[in-house]
Length: 529
Ligand SMILES: [Zn+2]
Image: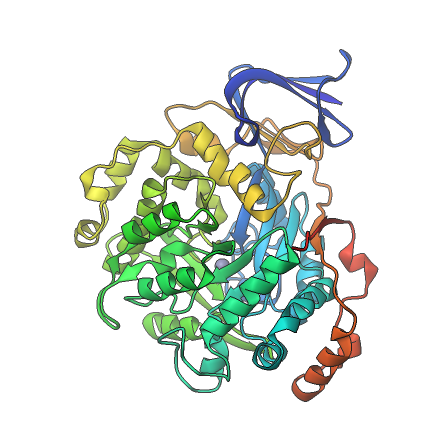
């Protein structure tokens, strides 16, 4: 039992914005009151928020592990930390829930093993389905059954939601047919538009807690904002989440210098309540690009002329990894940084445009505190804007000295309440009675919000203090968050036949059946429509 006494509480999901009040905890949950003898944390002068929720990061699975091998000199504090360090570092930052954003179903065992090995944080993973050959065949021949197949894949893997990465485009590239230029390209027998429409509809009908999570075609390419808009229009009327919108917000001619189209995309998002996005902010310094979008990695490799991992997952996806450094003086890097900030500053609904760096693609999650300061502190932001490539800044609205400063309430929305709501995690991201007792307590440092968010005083996970006075005290295991979705078993013989023609793995040994890999788990049920 625990009483967090007299802190300034930010709990936007329950309409609480800086009220001084107590937060009480019993048996890992938030309760209305605890007896007088309960342990007491004096939070006077401190800021109390729900534990952070990261909606999109890359922390577990084969590609993360391959990236670790590319940077073996930095196992603990580097850009791709070990499983152990990942859990500790997130906890020390006040984050208690993280979503691994891209796992091929065939690699689910690996991802589950690493999630199990990652201490403290609860974790979920999204399953890649945008370049899956059995699904392509169903999309062509029996689109109405795609929904059953998706539910089957989710149950077979222990996954939480559905991710599309360059839908149709990775398979097209694997076949040597180049890159997608429009959503109507007839690459691998289905068009990107067919993949997006059919799968988004299936996810919607299944009533999964998190809508389809889309990494659009043409990531990083000048002029790609048209593809992004076309994707959004294709999705219209269904809920959808766009990953790392910054990387998809470029104007300019194909092959030419990119321009910012952040204002146009921010406006579209503002006007469509069913759509959401995370930003994928670029932060200057070292990064590690890792993506199922293998064609993008091939392009990056041509830019860096450095190390490159390219991997194939049979019948499901590609994968590429390239170490990368973002530099302030570089026009393109500075523009990417500027576009991310524009999206944040032009967004009118913090519940639907949430914080990410696409860790470690745009930068490490360890840079979140600096990003928060950029959003909260106009003077600091303008000082930084003054240091970066001038030509790039002239292509953005940032030189207009936007006066917006995020409030603590808005930060609480974009780092915990918003992501939890978008993920459909009802027990996360808020401090109402019955919520998981994941709580972060900060010193209220008005002069330096970066220092404040970099070192919370206390972090409580499931009611247990895991960080006290800024130090890690206890590091128990986190839980796997998975979805419960029912399917018609008649889909199994259909899938088995599709598997036999395409996989080297037998259908019977494909699903994860090792119970220890799926425990301890918390299942969030789908609500079919
Ligand atoms: Zn990502």
